[in-house]
Each structure stands twice: as C-alpha cells, then as structure tokens.
Length: 265
Image (tube, rainbow, N blue to C red; front, side, top):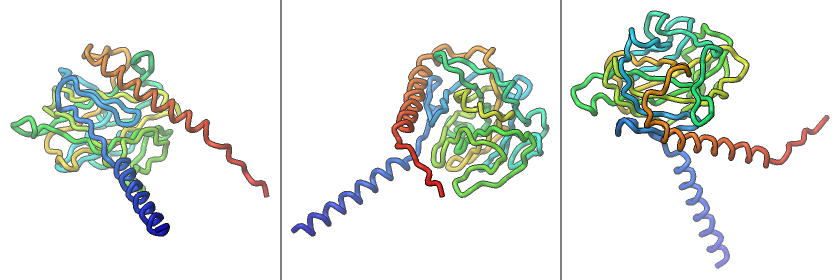
C-alpha cells in the first residue's frame, strides 16, 4: 500500500509539473484589432492601437523600413540593409539614445514608438499584420550587419539586449495601409540607460498570418509631441501599474535570494 501511495504521489507531481510547464509556455497575444481603444502588455512593453493620420512616408520620419512577402524582418543600422531592410538610409538608420526624448505616463518616463504598417486586401481580416518578434538592443556600433541568431532566437548583435518580446508571443495590428498608423509602443526609458550610445530595434512579421503589402515603418515619437488619443490615458495607468508591480516583485525576489559565497582557492 505504501509503495502504491508513493507511486500515485509521483504521478500527481509529474502531472502538476506538466500543467505548470504548459501554463508558463503559453503564448501571449496582444490583439489590437478589436477596436481603437485596444491595448496590451508583454513584459515591460505597452502596446496601443491607433489610427493616427496622416502617417506614411513624407509625413513621418522612419528609422526602419522593411518589406517582404510572407515573412519579413529587419533592424535599423548604418551598416547596410540586412534581412528585408529597404533603401534609402534616410528611412533606415541608427538611433542615438541621447536624441530620444521620453514621454511621461503617470510620472514615469517611456520611449514612444509608432508602427505604420501596410497590408493588401479587401476585407478587415486581410489587413491584419502579426508581429512575431521584437528585440531592442543598445550598442556602441551603429554599423551592424549580422543576420545570425543564437539557439534562443536572439539576434547576435554586438551590444546589450534590453527587451525581448519572447518566442511564441505576438501582437496583431490592423495594417490598413500607408497613411494611417496602426500601433504605439512604449518601453521604460531606463531600460536603455546602459552607457551605450545607440538603440537598435529588430522586429519580424508574418508567421501564421503572412505579410503581403507595402512597407512596415517604425518611427520614434519624441516627448514634445502630445499623445493623440486622450482616452489612452486610462488604460495606460492600468498597464503601467502592472509593469511597476512586476518589476517591484522581481526586485523583492532578488533581495530575498541568499548571498552566494565564493570559495577562495
């Protein structure tokens, strides 16, 4: 009887471990296609739907422009046009961190980015674009050219990874065409305070929902420009509170860890 009890306990522990692992591996999908007030959070990054006009080349100043059928990816650099980056360099270039003026949300500084994407199609569903990767780095090298990834899918840049959306996560936007922006993204400004000079943003689109259309363009919006939708303030506060609480818990856990002693030989 005792051996049966131990065996059953082992099965239950194994099953519990399986479900915990499955829950932790479950993807987060931020769906910004549900309406103009849609928003969500993945890690430290906040995402908000927008329909700001006018946008598109000539009305905005993009630092990254990518385009390809099916799956597309790229990052900003002065060192060429890796992956699916598009010419010319005045629409694809390095970003000096010292030039990135933050906005303040509930008193906290954030860097504000805007995505203007463009999908073909006659229906709403055909205009949906899926962002499947987002990695942000700081670096002292503005001329990177790598197209290599490590075993975890991290772009092998010469720099510091400060944000990673994570494998399996995604953001859905309504890519209704150049001329109307689709998404605002905010990251805490202190993430990029690593002592390095430049910010590099890598993004990829189109795993389950193939990309099919014009350019996807990333723009930095400086803090002197007001946030266009006043109604965004209330969801921002809620998401900001979630970000701050998460980071406070991480700090508490770090301080509770026992001190590691080094053995001297």
